[in-house]
Length: 185
Ligand SMILES: CC(C)(COP(=O)(O)OP(=O)(O)OC[C@H]1O[C@@H](n2cnc3c(N)ncnc32)[C@H](O)[C@@H]1OP(=O)(O)O)[C@@H](O)C(=O)NCCC(=O)NCCS
Image 1 (cartoon, protein in one colour):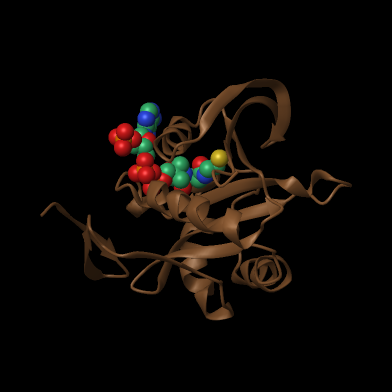
Image 2 (cartoon, rainbow, N blue to C red; image 1 turned 90 degrees about the horizontal axis):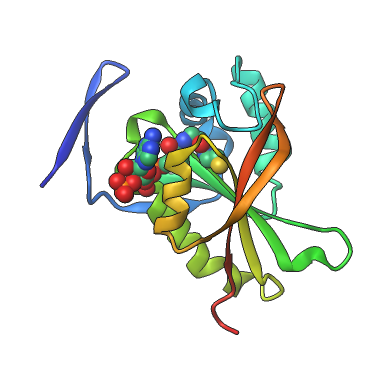
C-alpha cells in the first residue's frame, strides 16, 4: 500500500491512497479546514478568488455563499473537509441546461487522484439530481495542467481555447473549455 506521511499541526497524519472520499454540504465548523486551502497562494494561483487573509472573511463566505449555493460540497476524508467542489447553474433565460464545475483541494493532498474521483462522483450524480442539466462545463487557465488532466481523466472533452477570456489576478488570460454532456439521453 502506498502511503504518504505529512505534518499537520504538529501531529503526524497518514494519508492512504485508498482513503474513502466523500462529498457533503459545508457547515460553519468546517472553517478551520477551509482556511487551510483558502489561505494558500499555491491553491488560489489559478482561481478567480484572492487568497483569504482572515477567518472572518472565510466565515462570511461559508455563511453567505457556500451554504446557500445551489450545489456546493466539501471533499472529505473521514468526514474532514480537505477541499471543495461546486456546480453553478446558469440562470439566464433558457440557459438552465448548462452548469459550471469548480473545485479546489488543500495542497498536501494533491496528486493522489482525489479530485478526479470527486469529479466522477459529481458527474454520476448531478445530471440525475438536476434533470434539466444537459451540459457540465469547466473553464481552466491554460497554465493549469493538473486541472486539465483531472478533467481528461474524468471523461470531459476538451473543446478548445477561449482567447483573452477571463481576468485572473488582474490579468486577462486564455482559458480552455472542457465539457461533459448528460449521458442518459
Ligand atoms: C487542480 C487540482 C484540483 C488537482 O487535484 P488532484 O486531486 O491533485 O488531481 P488528481 O491527483 O486527481 O490528478 C492530477 C493529475 O494532473 C497531473 N499533473 C499535476 N501537475 C501537472 C503538471 N504540472 N503538468 C502536467 N500534469 C500534471 C498529475 O500527474 C495527475 O495526472 P496522472 O494521474 O495522469 O498522473 C489541485 O491541484 C488544486 O486544488 N489546485 C488548485 C485549485 C485549482 O487549480 N482548481 C481548479 C481551477 S480550474
